[in-house]
Image (cartoon, rainbow, N blue to C red; front, side, top):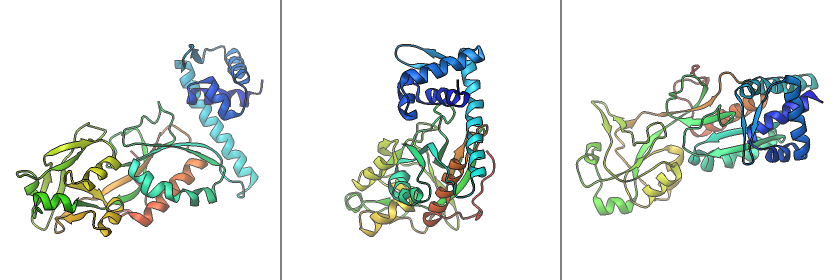
Length: 313
């Protein structure tokens, strides 16, 4: 038994949740992958996986062993790269999760530049606004807006998103143009609610001017949990929306959105790339994080930390 092949097969089965899917990604037969894992279990004298007709679950011992295996595999990959010289490119599968508007408008269009540098990295990108369990779902890193609440994660701050308040011309023609943010609380005006993943509820927005600071929640007829749907609702005239500059610019230029309360300021939204603290940060993860920071610097540069480094979470 080749122990490296066996560990790689085991790790891929855990990540895929299936011997069949693992075999496909490894370009091996299902029988070969099954034999490798069985031989590994026999060598260790420990049951690593529970198998049923429908799915494969990792055991408690298997989960602990998996965490060691992925660090060892990453160390081996880095060691080979360093010994082979700087010309060897990082390679392998990279699992990431990013917010849907950021993926659509910025990161995916910029990916040709990433692949021009790193053609041997295979990205599997989850696109969602939900909270991803990085450990349980075996994700290498996530890109998320807002202050991070999970103190167990490591994070790098890569951008500060400038926010504005907008409405569609049709909405303003129907309801009128508010001149003060407080009008959104006690009038016929409506906002589009955004259901934040952490709470499942719309959160208030903070605005300030020279004299005062307000928290505006507003009343909504529609609330959604996806950024692209949120933007679409605003464009359809379903209410007032709060948007980062990268989402509003093109629509503002085309006259599809009108800025409101321009004498008020909204606090910038920090954007982080977060990753597990106990997982080896392989070279492919490091170059991806560096690339995200580079791309975001062109769209939403950091305001108060030009070195782009956030505190450890």
